[in-house]
Figure 1 (tube, rainbow, N blue to C red):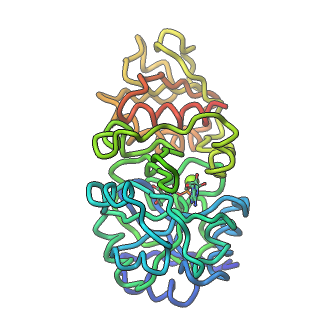
Figure 2: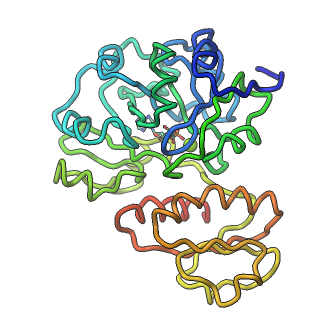
Length: 317
Ligand code: TXA
Ligand code: MG
């Protein structure tokens, strides 16, 4: 593993050259920063698990920039997936598809499927173009920590453990992609994310949310682990009146507390989109400040609220 300082660059060609040499590069996307390796280099992919401290049975998303890259990644593209691609590629959507035999087991954790995403972030696209190979990438955080929405957060978690950080702006969504399994009779959302369920249903009305825990664990291994958690204890509340004001406590939500100045950190968001954008960054700010407790206001589970509640509940669990 790299124990040198991690290279910081804004040069996509310099970053891509490292990918082609089998090194790890963190790069910006519109959802969160990813930690990339050449998807067809098993040794490079193994380094991702080592750098993150990620369990080996949690599969990675493969990032592409052209649809013709699917030829070596998937066996076929089911009709529902085709319709999702037309509507949401490039964008914050990951499709789980039947895996091509060329895809290394390291990427899919041995599953018969592979998750594929085409980001729409211009730096991600330029980087993937320069790599000239599909790039396997989980979020660029140490396992269990909040996903990084700024390169500085990647640096805080992974400096010295990865070859390079491709520096970009702050991620403009702040929540990960929606993961949809398209291998069954109807599409199943395995992880709520930046594309709302309602938007998927406009394209394929039969799309449903994954049901019982048993099938969830079997189909999306990642969702079984504790995730997105700051060091502080996260307490969910319906209203800020339930939050105990204290300089070591923090509050984030839509409704302003009566005395925001009584909290060590306070983030009042005008809408659910802003809440989602701020959440992981706020968690990391609270950690840096040494907050012991973060109160987070619940939101209705509609639109982006479904993904936001998923992340809040995981952080609080
Ligand atoms: O927005 C995102 O999705 C970011 C950016 C970097 O693309 N990536 C990301 O990756 O959040 P990660 O590894 O943190 O989360 C990927 C999720 C995990 O829950 C994993 O289990 C699931 O997708 N997944 C990946 N491949 C899968 C597959 N073949 N079958 C089922 N679930 C899969
Ligand atoms: Mg992650």
